[in-house]
Amino acid sequence: MKILISVICILVGVVPGVSRAQAPTKTDGLAEIAALLGQHHEPEASSPALTLKEVERIALAENPEIAVAARRVAIAEAHVPAAGSLDDPIAMYRGWGVPLEKPWDYNAAQNMFSVSQTLPGAGKRGLRASVAESDVDVAKAQLEQVRLEVRVRVHKAFDDLLLAQDELRIHDQHVDIARQAIEAARIKYAVGKVSQQDILKAQVTLTGLAEHMIRFDRDADLARARLNTLLGRDPAAPLNVQGDYAVLVALPAAQTLEDQALQSRPDLVAAREAAERSHKEQALAKRAFLPDFTISAGYMLMQPSQNMRNAYMVEGSMNLPWLNHRKHDAEIREATATATEQDAELAELRNSAFGQIQEVLVEARAAQQLAHMYHDQLRPQAETTLQASVIAYENDKTDFLDLLDSQMTVVDVDLDWFQAVADFDSRLADLELATGTSLDQQQQTTPEVKP
Image 1: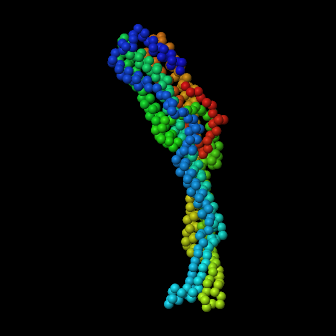
Image 2: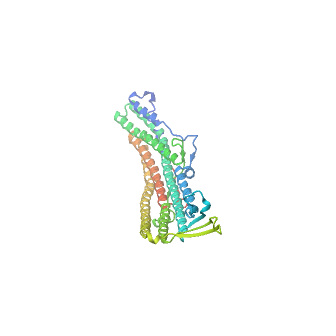
Image 3: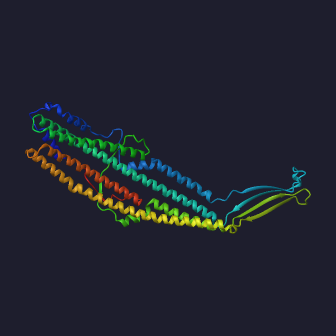
């Protein structure tokens, strides 16, 4: 930054004998670019900057997708008591022997009042309740998956907004230098020390800086809209973020990440619960050959002519499932096929998760190497080149465009550095999605100093 400040000083004193008012109107295009470059970007005072942890906390509490998934868990939990309950008891009245000549004469009939209850075969109620409990476990795992996906999307949107803010900050840091470069070019052109071609080249270079500003504003607005949506807020609401970049010293080994995924990845947990549920349904289908029993008890009021008018009755019945074996055999085959399919889906998901981990790990390592290269090599090299250009310009050994080109190279390298570390942070978010758990960056990171 000291080198860039020295550039300002050099450009201010380029031609001290000529005032800025002497610049011809032919360079008005540069003046228009200078006006555009003069737009600085300051965070809105009404919108305090939020950290990543604060944004994640708000998202987990307010995100509509999480609220929907939570209601699905509540629905599944409410179904558990009903799944293991008995069927409703049945009350019955039966009138026997009512004479057709006197259909209203119930005193001449046998009147029976009874209550019956169906009792499922051994183990059926328990299996039905267990299947419903498995549905709850699947819903809870799906809720955790939604939370994980929202958290990762929030992390990426946060990184995008933070990157756009930092790009705008870098742009603003170089605005004054660019404005002085415009003035220097106009002054030299006024006294005939540079050609119109050099002026046009300078204009192209500075237009590129203005193009950066338009793109950065767009990226910031898009990231802000995505992040506000994830937070359950108005997409157009003001929002600013703050945070530091960090680069992992060493990424975890693939085997470690795979072990974490098997234990913590919600979609794998949901698939395991779904597979377990299908095996329970298979066991329940096999119990269809156990008969269900219905018992009844009742009171009988006999005709007046009977010696004993008051009596009671007990009745028992059961279904005969083995006489309908085709139906139940088909149900068993269907349940077995479903269980097999769920097992295969679990194996496929596990294999896909391992492949995703490997791919993201490769991308993360490449992003890490690129970030280190920018920080350790390209940035020092660009600053050294700019320093050499400043010295050469002071001694009339290079022209204005070379100096401006060196300054723009430093700007581009700084922007590429931010893009590299933001890309690395995005890969870390992908690793979190692939493993289902956050990486412990406190013990594995070293903070980098912002330019």
